Length: 326
Image (cartoon, rainbow, N blue to C red):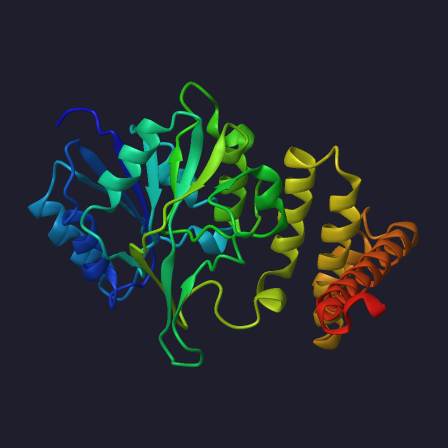
C-alpha cells in the first residue's frame, strides 16, 4: 500500500459490544486516497482482541493493531502515544472503539476540506450523542450556541470550552520530525481537548455542518459517572498544562478558569472526603488566598456585568412599547 494520506487512531478496551460497528464504519469509507487504521487494545478481557484479529486477517494492509497483555492505562502509561508514534498520514482522525462513524464519505469530505483550506489545522463536525442507559435524551452536539455561533474558530475560542467531539475531529498532523513526547503532558484529562488546543496553534478551526458520527455514553466509558470525583486531579493537571503551554500570557485564564475549576473539584473532594485529592489541591501553588480572592472578585464583576447587560437588553426591548415618552 502507498503511504496513507490519513491515519485513523482507535483506542479500545473491553469494547466487545461496539467494536464491530466501529471497525465497519472505518472499512466502509469511500476515498480516493489510502488510509491506515491504527488500533491500540489495552489488554481487553471480553473478546475485543479476537474481533480485531478477525478484521486484521481480512484487511492486513490497512489494519495495524497493538495488543497489550497488561493494561497500560492502569499503570498511568500514556496509551495515546502507542498509536500517535506510528502515524504516517498527513491527517489524523480519531475514533475510540465504543463509538463509530455514520457517513461513508466522512474521511473524503474532511480531507477535501483540509486540502482546499491550507490555513486550517483542525476541522470537525457535529455528532449524535447517545446515552446507552437512556438517562438523557439523545441530541446533536455541538449546538450553534456551544460553538459560539461560529463556523471559523480559533485557539481562544477553544480555551473557553471543548466544543469538538473526539470522534469528529481531523488534524493536520504537526509532529513530523518532532519529538512527540516533548509536547505531551503526563497524566492529564481530557487528552483529546489538549490535542485540539495543540493543533489549533497552527491554524484555524473549521466547522463542517454535517453530522457524521455517533458518540456513545456508556457505563464503561471514562466520562461516565462523577467525572470530578473520578478524574479531578488529572483535570486540574490538564488546566495547568493548558495555562503553561497555550495561555501563559493571559492571567484571566488563571483567575476565571483554573481557580474556579479547582474550587469546583475541591468542593466535591471535600464532600466525599477524598483525602488524596484534597492534599493535592491544598499543596497546589495556584491554590493561594490571593489567587482565590482575585478570582472571586473577577467572577463577581463578570456576574454583575452579565446581569446589567441582560437588564439593558430588556429595557431596550421595551422602548417600542413606551415610545418617545421615556
